[in-house]
Image (tube, rainbow, N blue to C red; front, side, top):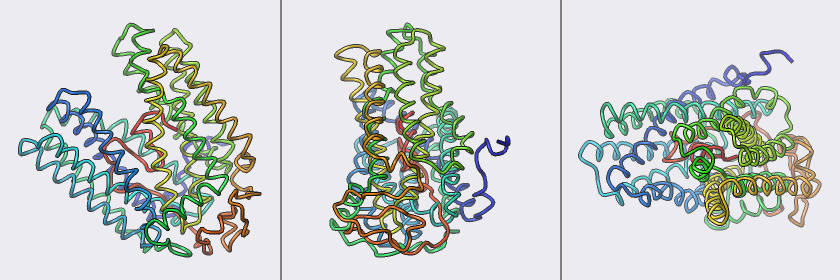
Amino acid sequence: MSLGRTFLDVRPLRTSPVFRRLLIGRTVSSLGGFMTMVTVMYQVWDTTHSSVWSGAVGLAQALPMVAVGLFAGAWVDRADRRRVYLLATAGQAACSLLLAVQGFTGGVPVPLLLALVAVQASFGAVGGPAAGVFVPRLLPKDQVAAGLALNQATGQSMMLIGPAVAGLVLGWRGIGVCYLLDALTFGFAFYGAFGLPPLPPEGEKSRPGLHGVLDGLRFLTGHRVVRGALLTDLAATVLAMPVSLFPLVNEERFGGDPRTLGLFLSALAVGGVTATALSGPVTRLARPGPVMLCASGLWGVSLAVFGLTTSAWAGIAALVLAGAADAVAVLSRTTIVQTRTPDALLGRVTAAEAIVGQAGPHLGNLRGGLAAGWSSGAVALVTGGVLCLAAVTAVAATTPELRGGAGAPDADSGSGSDPGPGPDSGRNPDPAPESAPAPAPESGSGSRSDSGSPTVGAVEGGGSTAAAPGAP
């Protein structure tokens, strides 16, 4: 294999000028989003000095994702996705401006600040499903995984740079300037969004209200490959999420040295960035199912090894490996969702994927804390890693379609009816459940991007290593 094919596949940047514009806009606005994430946490802590209020920041972001996401996905599958994306980006930008105003004028009570964060997150929950159709509509099918890898690489890079820039700006000019810089970065998001063509749903539009939501859920439960991908993600995050255990393990094993604790978090990010930068062979392989299963299993094994080690450097090496496995699993899962879901359902499925990406890490951190309270941090890590490996193995054993790779059609959609592939079967070979809207003929190309900048504590709708580092 040539050295050029080892690194990140950049063909989408040459193939689609529209995707290139979106990527530039997404990258810059993500930088501002991470700056706001840090600034909100800093402002809440500086105002209250309460860990409870600090924890409520994540809650203010997560609740709208769950409450708004599925209904937003149904709306997105009825409307022009470009128009919805622009509306959501404008709403997020307005919220950033309001955050800047309150930052310059002396701040507002913390409940009002969190309410504003929740409103911004609600706009993000609308824009995320709309952005979920971009990659499959702007790029050829054989470049979808590469386009997603480019999105992931830029998101992870901004996750590393954004908090550091926020710290510098906070020390130099204060919270108002930090929020204002985020608001200004939305100009780049609009730069990317205005280059989009109209993107109405292909095929039958979503039914309004709850009926449309139920159609999306019926597809998720009936489509074995997509369902297996999301179950694998839940197994990895709910059973093995390690971040809440880092302070305890650091205290138990390494004397509570803050430098070691910081290296734990950085190691996950370094592994993720490195794996994404070297993702060329993975995206060209076009077998995201087996790759995702192997990467998710490796995530569990690496965290179990981290729980067993008594050497700080060996532990950091295990976390680098875990971060790399995480990045590959996220990329493969998102590729499965993007390429196996009919366009008419993609908004709702992307919203469900984002909810899984939000809920899984939070539940996983809770599980880890409870398990450590009954035993120790090391035991919680080891048992979580073993349980993750067992659960991923069970998904692989019961979902042969997922083991078969992206190109193998489902033998059984699991819905109790099999209408057979629609006219778009070359692009989405899995038959959808009978009640779901049938996919239309393939338009020939596609892309995905996030809405504006990440809301507080989140990056991509697919997933989310920003909200909780290391979450597959």
